[in-house]
Length: 90
Image (cartoon, rainbow, N blue to C red):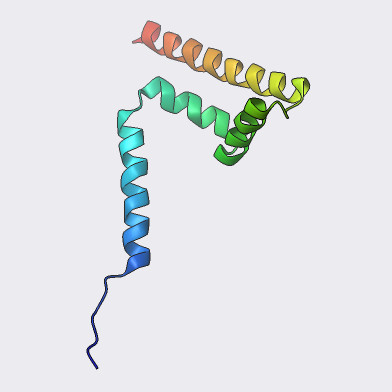
């Protein structure tokens, strides 16, 4: 019987995931990364994507959608104000 060795498929898949995540981070601006981190304090990526899918299907409540949008806008505002303060100091 011929035994053909295959590479560690699990490792290769994880490495592809890591490479993809790194490429996404490398392409993001500092501002975008900071906003993303603030959003993740309240919403996981899965929760955020779920909200967007429900919005597209018309299945999200106005209250839930507005709370999400308000939070994202607050994150953007906080990051921009923080970066402006850093630039003024430097």
